[in-house]
Amino acid sequence: SYELTQPPSVSVSPGQTARITCSGDALPKQYAYWYQQKPGQAPVLVIYKDSERPSGIPERFSGSSSGTTVTLTISGVQAEDEADYYCQSADSSGTPEVVFGGGTKLTVL
Amino acid sequence: EVQLVESGGGLVQPGGSLRLSCAASGFTFSSYWMSWVRQAPGKGLEWVANIKQDGSEKYYVDSVKGRFTISRDNAKNSLYLQMNSLRAEDTAVYYCARCGAEGDYAINWGQGTLVTVSS
Image 1 (cartoon, rainbow over the protein chains, first blue to last red):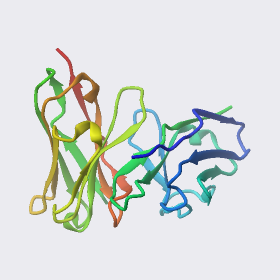
Image 2: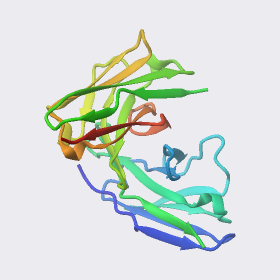
Image 3: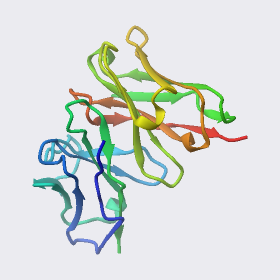
Image 4: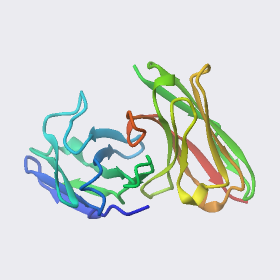
């Protein structure tokens, strides 16, 4: 198994752009996924396969990948976007052994 | 609408056992990988186990290998997690999740069931 590294926290003012990074050695070979979790709620998938957005997720959420780092970008951040965000990938061995990053607390100032 | 409803959580003593269930509806259960993911109080997400559509492949995080068993009953649209030899560090909310085609991510999540291991 391997690790995915995220910053513990990111702060941004409303209307600005938030970028949350996730680093891992297997990311050039494996897709990354992003989940949003608000207090007391179950996680919600916001980005899949590096940059795809599920139906119902606002267009201000986007994902990108470059080498060993993937990035979740939230453009025009709104107060409702304040949450914990987790990146996730799979082990590079080819089996679906899932790994989560430690999570990033997004604070909207 | 996809619905995943977990049950079976509760307080159990160290060394004890518990069986979690997840009732699925709103999709063709037998067509999807399924997973259990847990979250200890105030901590991040941790994948626990996943199981292929027909139950022929199962994968576990190292910390639960030999103690937990994931299973499914496609006729009952249900997912299970049998947890034995429970430890204090297994205390968490356990989520059931419907997975993507290769079992490597969670499309939908249940609301979770709390397991507390304490004497």
